[in-house]
Length: 242
Image (cartoon, rainbow, N blue to C red; front, side, top):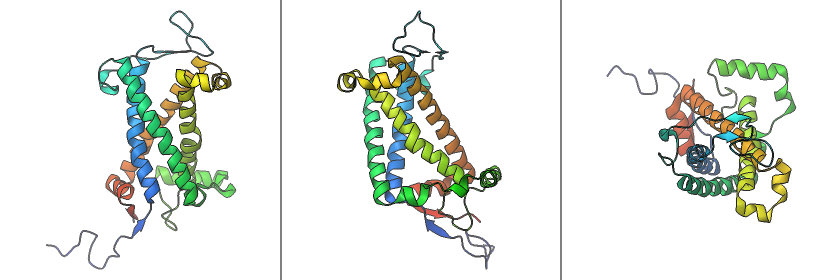
């Protein structure tokens, strides 16, 4: 042994470990991660049945489409082969998991004041100088505030708030609109979204944005320290980087 400890050389200050994520956040994060991955895979399987997007109420093979989608390979879809009925079953079940999970997280976030404490966006944080500073810190792979490691920076707040309060609710709302069973109960919803094909297009766009957010989020977690981030989301304990 050379006299060093796993935490650094002798005499060095040991790394500070804090509790960064509460139980509600950790539970929802795990459930949501599984639900989103399965929804994306099964959604691609459904897309393969008719890989064209339209605006308005109607759209079929000979109508002009605003987007022609590729046929996604089996390794990207659920199941791994073309089976529209099975893809829909996976999609509908985990849509319920996502929807009720988000509802439970919203209630828990309000009850524990997580949203007000951690995700509240203040006016001074939106000033150009503050945004530029946070962007420079991200480019330098500095993702936390040394003064308050528990605090989210403004770029994190904006991205998380956009996903929680815009993208996920919109994906759920357009998914409900596409369900034939819900059309009888809420016939006004399709009208609000501009028609069935418009709802389908918005649903696909929102899913694409969620997929891009997931990819960027995972990349930043890896850059910031995958082991440390994974531990914080499983146990709540996060080691503050030097």
